[in-house]
Image 1 (cartoon, helix red, strand yellow):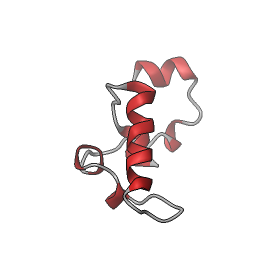
Image 2 (cartoon, helix red, strand yellow):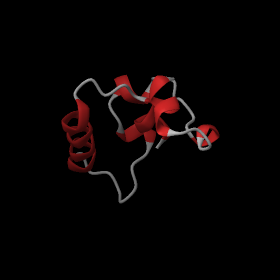
Image 3 (tube, helix red, strand yellow):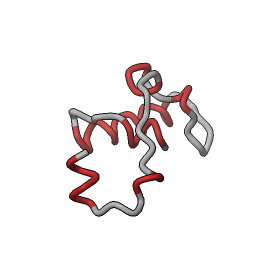
Image 4 (cartoon, helix red, strand yellow):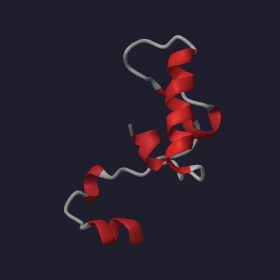
Length: 63
């Protein structure tokens, strides 16, 4: 989840949808793993949003 949330997603929701559909089409189990993601997403360092749960949405978007 951290890899998916930490990725920039230049293609917005369509790109995310394609990544998920591709992973399941490749025969993954019921739960996605980092190995099921494309290299540009799987190798990117992630941002941990759980530590920022006390911030409001505007502060998170600004960061």
